[in-house]
Image 1 (tube, protein in one colour):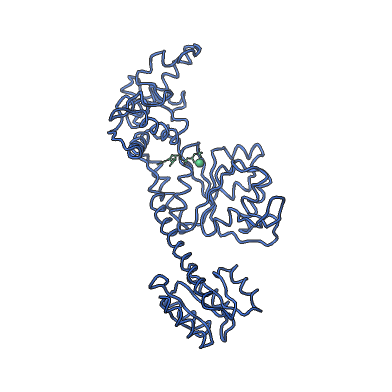
Image 2 (cartoon, rainbow, N blue to C red):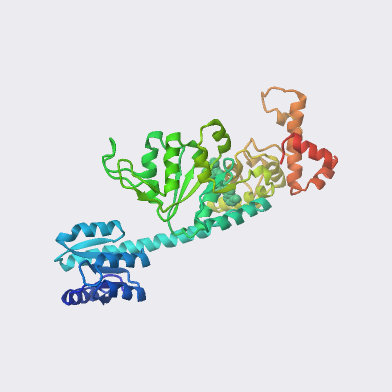
Length: 460
Ligand SMILES: Nc1ncnc2c1ncn2[C@@H]1O[C@H](COP(=O)(O)OP(=O)(O)OP(=O)(O)O)[C@@H](O)[C@H]1O
Ligand SMILES: [Mg+2]
């Protein structure tokens, strides 16, 4: 027996077939409705969307193919099974390309129908699972998934929510580890495409020779080794978002091809000649300076303009010290739970270390440091010594021993003193939540002197 309360619409102008299928599928536990031709089928389906539609092809008034098209337009998730005469198999195959589920050849036996309907219902329910999983992801990765206490990042979050709703191509630029992928996911999961796929391609990780087939797929036999037809990333991302990560790494040849897809919204498989429409939203990201690459002639300016319709910039962690604490606490909670340990928080000395550290690897480095600290920790707070060595500087970083780890050469005093000053000023700023007036007072220098030093040491 099939699962109860699932519904099927049977469409055939032959009353005998309608009756036979109705009786059989009701016995299988489905709720059955019927229609006599394509027009009636559309009317019935409009009132009651069924899980499956069994559709004769040759009927008066409106044929099955046109009806299938209209029905799938109303609900892409419905499984349309065409019933066709042997001579019309070609038409049925075309209908499958347009989104029908399968076909049976008349005369069929009922066992065949039973298998087809059961398979259609199974696939439908798997699809429903996927949609609900994606909805869950969307809740987790919507713009709310970006944690921050920093005003500029909050602006970014608002911008993401706004651009997500549009179809516009987005280019995300920012240092490594600043959350570009998270931003890309937020754009997708905050958009009307959220129930569609979010497909990421790491442009830097694919061998040059395979990039094109990776992007656009290939036909069987397109090149040596292409034993079967392959769906490219554009095809996989249909109705969803394609995230082109590390876009700065693609070759000039592929830049041209990509530009063409963005302009014409269609592409061809390798070895294929038929253009395929690309219903895909593009989000690209890079930590390279694309403008500089354009000047050097390694990145096409026209492609840049196509990608950069909406420009989003992520902010280095050192420029938003308020987030260090927020993210450290957040990830501490997560890793403690993962490791089944109870850790209350960070010891003040550990926190100072983290605040004074410039985090060249940004949030990713912070996440790794916190994970390591949780593993190293033996008590119920994270101590300074639980942190990775390169982060440990201590608030009394003045000690030359720490500026000169074992064996490191002594350099000019001026150079080492500036390094020290930079660390102290960073720490003081972070402790004061970025407030410069208060920082200057604490450091016992004038506000002007502080501003001068910020500029000199390029502290932002
Ligand atoms: N604001 C944030 N809130 C929560 N988690 C964050 C935030 N920013 C970054 N992360 C986390 O930090 C890690 C690194 O982020 P992500 O991979 O998005 O960076 P990226 O800019 O793509 O880095 P790369 O250039 O190295 O690929 C991820 O685990 C991500 O979830
Ligand atoms: Mg990334």
